[in-house]
Image 1: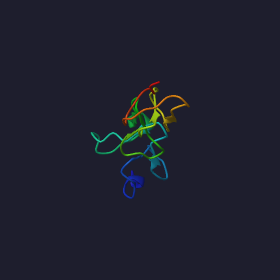
Image 2 (image 1 turned 30 degrees about the vertical axis):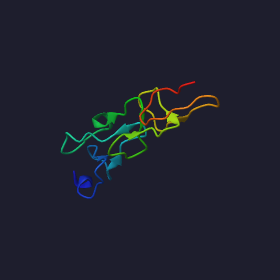
Image 3 (image 1 turned 120 degrees about the horizontal axis):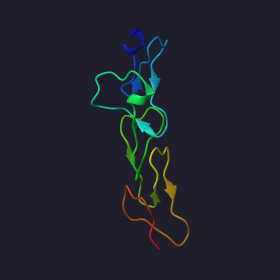
Image 4 (image 1 turned 135 degrees about the vertical axis):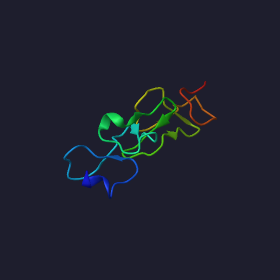
Length: 94
């Protein structure tokens, strides 16, 4: 697994891959594993968070945004007439 030598923390090293690959958008690294060997080792990001490509950790949705889906790569802004005052929200309030 030579590709794992110079890999970033949130990358996985598939068997016979010429280079380490990042966890895809919507997933993050699995910190409980010493080495991730496939995309299935990456963990799906929970509601109220998002994960961009190669994320080591899920990021909380900022106030004013929300995410009500698993496996999201971004958060959604609250629509006009609604708000969200706290981070890591799954809905906006009227």
